[in-house]
Image 1 (cartoon, rainbow, N blue to C red):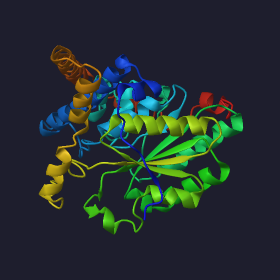
Image 2 (image 1 turned 60 degrees about the vertical axis):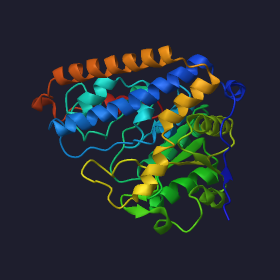
Image 3 (image 1 turned 90 degrees about the vertical axis):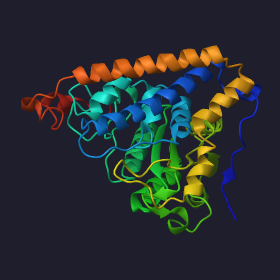
Image 4 (image 1 turned 30 degrees about the vertical axis):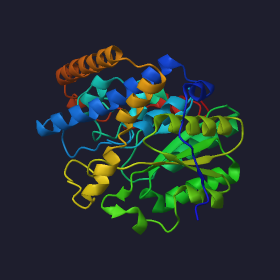
Length: 348
């Protein structure tokens, strides 16, 4: 029997307004979801053109989860999004052309050509770059939350992880500390049902990942990861609860990874029927239908937004392609601390 609370879907526009979103906010969420998918679709093109070194990872099917949570974050909150969470970067304000530059290892990417294509973040936007060893970013996010507590700042840290990564020790260590100290922390599980090729029933024995939250002393909630408004509502509740001293929450966004683990993986192990069923719940199509039924989205508006996104993508691809490769003489810049860095008081 499940222990965690199961979130209800969002219904009327009235409920959305009560959650703090007006019609323009809803259209912004829709645009961010479209840009997120557009960036990753263009990334596939760049990979096939041989312009992306290494492999290439996407979060198709997870746009509602990433955009919904990021929309709920405050401007001074911090987050550690992972390779399925492109929508967090988009929603926080990273320009698509800089993401394309990052993919291609160019100087104008967030890491200035110094790291792999999805190992990126813009610290000025409250984001911390991921590392490959998931969920190694959770203790980092918890460390931020602890710092906020020590400084008596009303800020919240959000940490993402996958259901497969939840088996690692650093996930449990992070949740233990956050729960014990009641830190301003929100844990977000991107449960896309496959840890590479391992299905969830071989990953954990509990009914849901969120069921584990009770053992750490805080709330767990399962939300439909294809329903952007339900994700936003639950994330907003959890973030504001944490901000006001109510401690952490574990939000499990249930969706399906609609592509392989990476571009080199054809996902042959996922039953075809499973892909077909979840394709009917595509988060963008689902939100588009909701907007038409509840927020009077017209065909003309839809076409205008589609043209706007297409222009953004085309301009971004060109600008990124014009970005120079990094100067080899600068390879150590940003790797080692400078004397100026060391002079900065640790509490700032």
